[in-house]
Length: 159
Image 1 (spheres, rainbow, N blue to C red):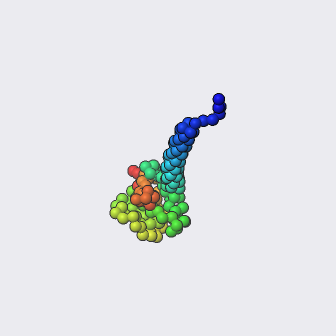
Image 2: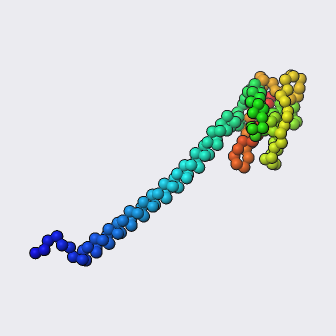
């Protein structure tokens, strides 16, 4: 009696089963790798979105918020100190200047995202129509461009 010898048919069946199992494992590996790649790409996109939102967090705080005139003046001063590197328009409408309001840093129009430089300086005399009362309350509103970047913040004095 022979022991330990397999017939050729048995060897062929074991080889075929091994090939099928290896192909299945490789297929599952590729599937998991592709799903992982998609998850990494999605996570990278979300991280980029969060990063851009975080960069503008101090500006988004003004959207729909009531802020004091003192805070408005300090914000305008800070933006103007940065100069042209801060591509941001600030529009302030006081009770004394009800019709037009004043642009600081850049002039913004809703119909186009192109802005022109504004050289308006803060008024310090209380009699000026553009004077920002540091004790007054203002309602802030943020405008964004097509790329979701904040390009204008408007402040309207409340009664």
